[in-house]
Length: 310
Image (cartoon, rainbow, N blue to C red; front, side):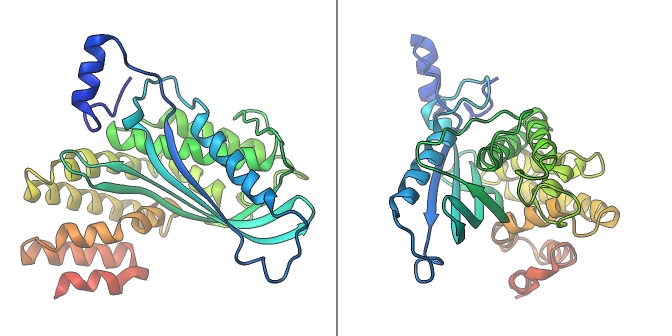
């Protein structure tokens, strides 16, 4: 399956197929940043080169590993960012941090990239030593760092595939779910963020929502929002907005069953600015519909949505 050819380098892809030179490339184009500003003043670290090596190791892990069996051209890779903010170094080779994970996908016929995932993980704790191999297997826990990276790689790919095909990312969501279950079972080594009892917005609940039948309309909504909404916006903005309004109404029904679910909240963390831009050109009645839905579904960003009432 090559689900992105239509959207990235279509002509180049067709020509390559004609000449039989389609190259196999990794799926992710992940920009990795290690931020140590929060620890520089109060922690003495003998060799800060370890952060450079850590950044390189994570970048290689995310960008050179083959995560799927699908064929990707170089221009089709999924753009994503991983910013790890180190907050504490409680022991040599042990790090506590928070991380921002963001991914996007192209919108057909434009140069615009729509954010698919914008998630902050406040439970990053891991051990790392230079030259340590990062081995990942969804069914076998090795290290917490490898588990977290593999988890988010599969989440990013799963959401990307969901946006191009209805529930198209299910196998990758399942891999992330398996990772969470295995890491959560490690009483000593798994680290925080993997267990249901720890937090309502952690990694466990993110993938639980993605794997839940009750939340399935949200994943289906990702497909409608992007393929029937945003990908058609350039040619037919009115119809695109109608499709997106339908998605918001579906989310309203889901929210009544599972209020403030982490998956729904994550959607709006990713889409709030885009939604304001999409409906800013709508007719007054449609704009009001969108505003009423948005402040009900995402009240924490009500001030931003007030732009739709002006």
